[in-house]
Length: 166
Length: 158
Image (tube, rainbow over all chains, first blue to last red; front, side, top):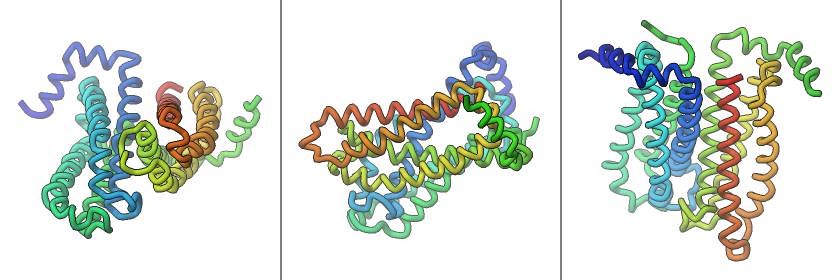
């Protein structure tokens, strides 16, 4: 089954059609998606500012990261679920959008950035927890800011028919 | 009462460059949402702390002082990207109940944030007690989230 078949298969589900035809599903889901994404990305940005060494410098990085982590994860779960439901309701609307697929690719890159940081740079945390983070940490923080800003931007821009194909 | 003002805004055609360009409005809206992300982040890091969550090993005042320039900067960006959006469609905004609800809430919430919330975050925690901090944190989260919801609905339902 190709990706297109998969999207078309979901598109024909009665529950997908019902959500697509509902007056309320789209505005309600989109609003939940927005609020939870602002919570998630906002708290990630605050952590990244500490990683870049430009804010919350009086607080150890491990504390900023560890204390915000559960809230970031909770908001990420909500925004992902709302996003998946938005996709479930209109799979063929998003299938042909280049910006949607770029957003998905950037999500993967953001995940890779987190893993690389966690398994490589964060291992030396004891050396820079309370001081200015090393270049590798700042690169991870800068990449995180750029990637999440693009993910949010491309998500919003899927509302328009830019780079949309059949 | 304000209709003549909004009709006048419409005749100014300042917003024309936005409504005639197919890129201006979407890109200004994207910038508005990115600023919203920064507003939420710099508010929540403090409001969570007020609720006794988040960075609990740091004093509230310290977290609030560190977050403040980012909050103010992000709010200025919100304003700079919000005003052109009103100027580009003044009549739609005038007839949108969500726009007026958002503006009322915004006025109230800005006053609340820079008076009550500011005072509570800067006060000696032992003297204020934990209850006021929690009330202010919850009210702050509720008000700002409500503003974002109304803002989203202007575009969706107006």
